[in-house]
Image (cartoon, rainbow, N blue to C red; front, top):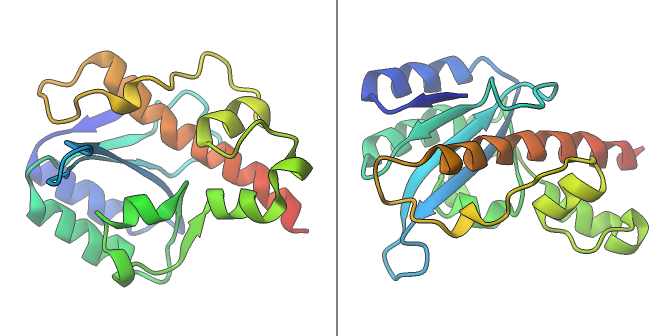
Length: 179
């Protein structure tokens, strides 16, 4: 995992990400339960084969609206890059909303296939990761932790990096159903 906090590093990473045809993305939101939620992290995976999260980029964008704007303008509106989310409507509230193009939502894919056909307990990302992709020791608790505090804990960063790992593998699994 590469945890980036410096503006110049994050800008460089965003520009480098523009060369990839597909991005698996997730966000962590500070104060999500209040009227004033703030985007804290953007997690990005570019390698579906990365099962440990070692190649995941975590961009710390808390209270950095110019970085989020650059991310949206450079990546989210780019029709040449497929952006994959789970429950994309939530993340897109913070990453370009209706401006975003070429979005794939694994929640919608799973819903279309149906939970019964997939034989899963529910369609949450963590459930799909465990029941379809056989991940173990999946942490579902850190999602509600305080993403507005700094420094973030190692447990929070580990949780954040693994979300995109699970997402990429679930996406790969669900794509097999398209045939």
